[in-house]
Length: 126
Image (cartoon, rainbow, N blue to C red; front, side, top):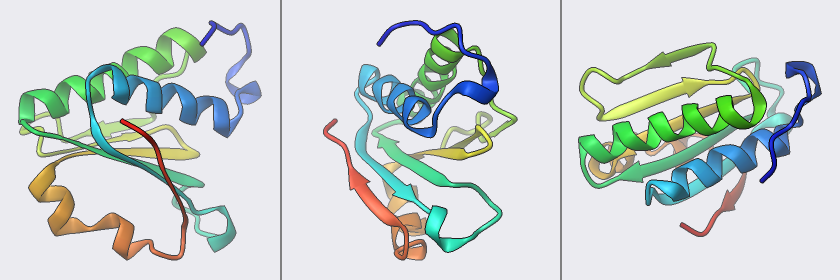
């Protein structure tokens, strides 16, 4: 993936998604799933990217990798970030896309894919 000189308004949702997925792969995140929510007319966001790690250290590393990759490639920082205190579930809000990085048992418990089952799901290779 190449660096871009595009402004924040010029980045496409697909370019942002690609940067997020690649950052998760770099830190060996598992179960990478995208949920496209655009057809649901929700005001929350257009899409989720969901993944999990096997330890709180890995979950934090995955989230930091996403922040670094998106900042380096697209000069964007999340509008909001939370969950770094215990790193069981970290959320990064990029406006159109919200990234959720879980510990596996927290992901299973909260089951965002089930709650948002009307979204169009894409599973990415880890």
